[in-house]
Amino acid sequence: MQIFGVDIGGSGIKGAPVDLERGDLAQERHKVLTPQPATPDGVAGCVVEVVRHFDWDGPVGVTFPGVVTGGVTRTAANMDKSWIGVDTAALLSRGLGGRPVTVLNDADAAGVAEMTYGAGRGRGGTVLLLTLGTGIGSALFTDGRLVPNTELGHLELKGHDAETRASVKAKEDGDLTWERWAHRLSKYMQHVEMLFSPDLFVIGGGVSRKPEKFLPLIEGVRAEIVPARLQNNAGIVGAAMAAKEAMAAEAAGAAKG
Image 1 (cartoon, rainbow, N blue to C red):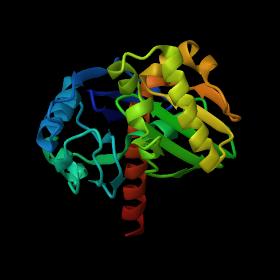
Image 2 (cartoon, rainbow, N blue to C red; image 1 turned 180 degrees about the vertical axis):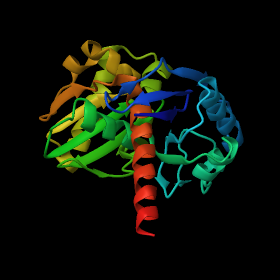
Image 3 (cartoon, rainbow, N blue to C red; image 1 turned 45 degrees about the horizontal axis):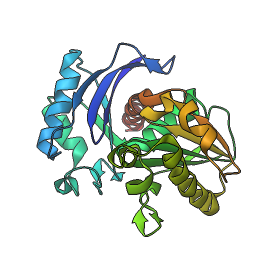
């Protein structure tokens, strides 16, 4: 079964049909740059462009880098503040001609994909996925169950929003060496570990393609640390999974009615 997934990020918007039997992209993903400013209308236009690139006419799952409840975006740390309070599912559905759209937090989507198909598959206990990119996203699982919208990238670290010191963007903006950035990331992960005592950290985002550059440099963390297997496609896969789940819930509701 194939469902379309779109991953909205602070720097890029990418999507593709997903083969949910394999947990992988069915075609090579299409990516466009996130417009600046990243307003609802501007980003919605880019999502439509990505979907239309594949002539897709079915349901669509979409991730958003912020808190999402009931299809409504509640925070927008790395997007335009006009997103706050927007019914994003309805906005994107209108842009896509009324087809069903399911929206969820980007790190939650990546986490669900990794727990189903990737590095967290079959793992019990407490698992914490961190997506490192423009910001830091988080997905927290206890015995395979998601605690949604944790947004742990916004914990305070040395008087700052953690993602402003330990994200990939912070590394690039500060021209930090891998060693210096790994030191910052270690401090952040030590803080998170103190709060949640995870059994496993899964590190996602584009940087997960280069685990040898920084994972051996992480210090002071007791939990096992592994790179995401789906790497930067995890959000797309998780978005498609969410759309499928919404379809199943709607069908079940219709059957009861």
